[in-house]
Length: 178
Image 1 (cartoon, rainbow, N blue to C red):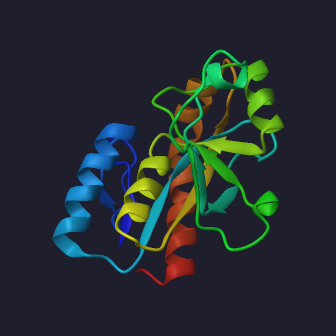
Image 2: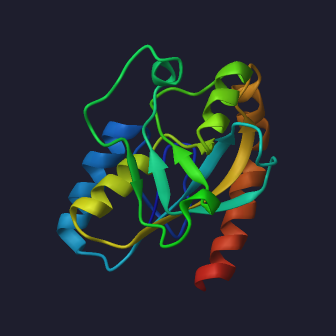
């Protein structure tokens, strides 16, 4: 099953599940319970903390839910905030951070990079959590629309349609959808 956020980011071959952590988790759980998919593939755009270039395609099987305050030692969490189904040296995996907030600070972006977290997408952690709960193999494919800095929203809006076209071509070629 191929899923996407929806709203202004929809694909003809993907089922929209909602924007952000809560909506995507609730709606994907509902879909999974109704259809029992053999595999979940999330397709969407992402912001780069600096190492991944604009309009680059990234595949990942690792997600985290890290809030900015954790990076500065101002909070902690008793829950597991990292999910990975990557079957190799995780240091070679692109880790996707998910939050309901978009990073707009270069300084904060540098902190994510120090923790080997390269990109952010609002929904992927929820997708990974639902897949883990239902024991479904999962992965994500992203196209970078922006750097996580003060121009993040402007870059996202300027690059979103091109990124979606790149993603659509890539997915159709990669998974054989027409």
